[in-house]
Each structure stands twice: as C-alpha cells, then as structure tokens.
Length: 168
Image 1 (cartoon, rainbow, N blue to C red):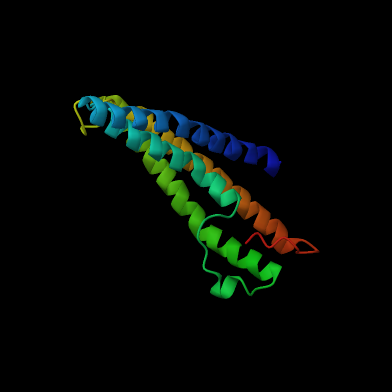
Image 2: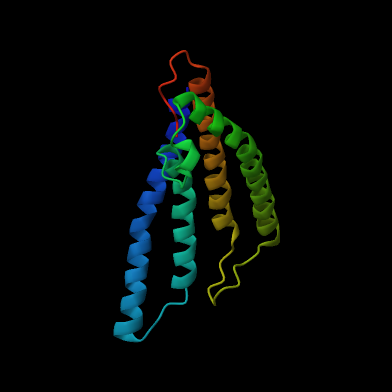
C-alpha cells in the first residue's frame, strides 16, 4: 500500500521535472529578447519565480522519499537500525503536525486569493495568483503524504523482528 501511495510522490516529481523545460525556454526567450532585440518581456520574472517555485514544491516530497534532505548525522549515524527508526518516529511526531498546519494554512491562503481575484502585483502582467497557490497546496499535501509514508516505514522498522531498514 505504501508503494502505491508513493506513486503520487513520483507523479508530482515527474511533473516538476517536466516544468523545467518550459522554464528554460521562457528564460532563453527573455534573455534573447532583452539582449538581442532590446525588447524585454513583462512576464518573464513572474513566470520564472512561479515555475521555479512549482518545481521546488513538486519535488520536495520526492527529495524526502530518496533521503536527500539535510540530516544531522552526529548521533543518528552511529545508532543501530532500531535506534534510527525510534529517532525518526519521534522526529516525525513533531514534524507531521507542523506540515499539516502549513498545508491547512496554505489552503486558506489559496481560497482567499481565489475569492478576491488577487493578482501578483509584481509586474505589469499581474496575473491572478491563485493557480500558483494551487501548486503550493498540492506540493505541501504531497509532502505531507510522503512524511506520513516515511513515518509508517519507520514504525515498521521499529517494530519489525529484523530491523534492517534504518530509514535514515
């Protein structure tokens, strides 16, 4: 079941990777337009930060899945597998409510932007911000899902008869 749920994380990461291509194309267009034709675009800055933010948010859960987030290994690295699992479970007990709270807060942030038709206010383009905030909510929701999956994996490792998977 956990592997099935992790497909959501994988799908979000693939979407994030695919977004790199239009980001590169938009930035190349902006640079060429600006420096070759002295005609900068009015949308490149906002499109750039929105796409880069989307790439980051959609890849955050995958980074957790493949253990690419920063960890402090001074104590953790020297623990046996069950010790690592215990430390991780305790850490996730504090981390899960924080990520859930942030996800819920971002949902309210999205709804307010949608209801008020809020624009970005960053350039003459001034697109509505709610589509970008959808990506923030989805990214954090997928991250929360992956945190819960990692919590479950560590619980399994903690209570397994042969604790060989440290989930560090």
